[in-house]
Amino acid sequence: MSSTLRGVGYVSVWVIVWGFVGSVIDWPLLQNDIYNVYSLGQAITFGGTALACIALAIKLAPRWLNSDD
Image (cartoon, rainbow, N blue to C red; front, side, top):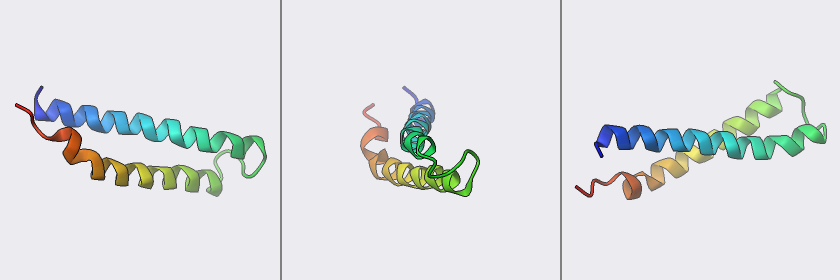
C-alpha cells in the first residue's frame, strides 16, 4: 500500500473516531440540558475531543504509518 493511501486512511479513521467519541460525550450532555445544540458548550466538547484525538493520532502515527515494505 502506498504511503499516501496509508496516510489518507489513517486520517480518515481518526476523523471517524473523533466524530463517534465526540457524539458519545455530547449525547448525555444534550439529553440532560447541560447545554443546547450549537452552543459554546457543544463547541468545547467537540473541540476538546478533537484535540485529544489529534494528540493520540500524532502519538500513534509512527506505529501505524511505518512502512513495512
